[in-house]
Image 1 (tube, rainbow, N blue to C red):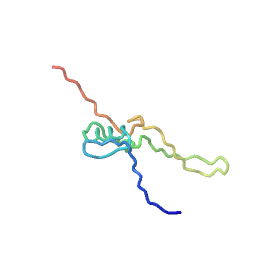
Image 2 (cartoon, rainbow, N blue to C red):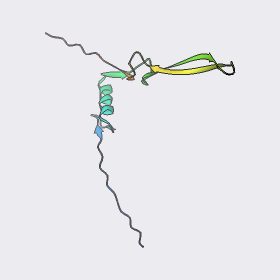
Image 3 (tube, rainbow, N blue to C red):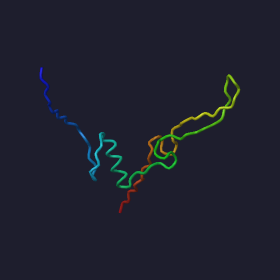
Image 4 (cartoon, one colour):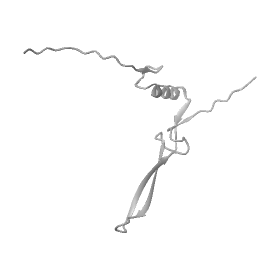
Length: 93
């Protein structure tokens, strides 16, 4: 038996933004470029997560002790996208 060392070359697809940043998906690259151009920004209501964290107190069914519960719901401002889009107005002359 003998031991050999070999090299593998793997080709893969990447999406390159206009500033040289690389992404694995086309969607991520498009969103990044829109942020660069100022067409979208992170939602202030959910800080870009798309979800609002709500805490509320309840009573444990078995022990009667108070407990704090956490619920995540879709952000109503951005509809769960995590970003807000700039509305472009068309002006006809």
